[in-house]
Image (tube, rainbow, N blue to C red; front, side):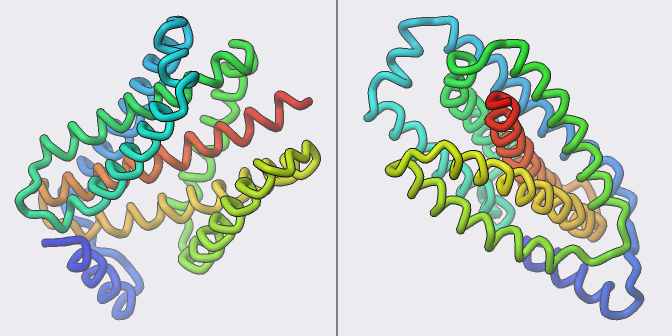
Length: 243
């Protein structure tokens, strides 16, 4: 069963009864989502700190543009490949998990910059604030009966505008504009986190078993939530640092 089959089953259930027939595999799949997500965050944090405390690695990754942008490109490719793994029958769960772990390592290397720019107390405080905000938002998306698809679509549209605004400010270097963008970024990723949480719940509720395909779908969900957490953390870090 591919990603579209999951979506079709969910849509059929919504249109007929407005309730979900949760499979027996659902609790185990949801646990895998958050286990993989926490695992990836731990890897990124450890790698980021390790790179930040190694002058040679720090200079290699952040001091050479070709290396830095090479890592960014590889990360984008990995995100695309992981997201498409559900549709690839010949791509095993082990390979998809390996790609996710590699992405976490590379992203941790890029995030090593925060250990250089911000002090450890600010990072720790912001991490716990992010964890609390993320937990409440994800719980809302999971338990709410309201359809968040419209909010999710609006937030993803706003995300594109946010990216364009951030790129523009890279040249203008306006501190006030960057401050405003940070607040908008927090609002956008709060909305995206709630929508992703609900979307993942709906998709996994329709998963019939713990097959590799179902677990790959859970892994894609973990990637989505990982990215939501990291982006929320970065925007909050920029806001609290200015204060």
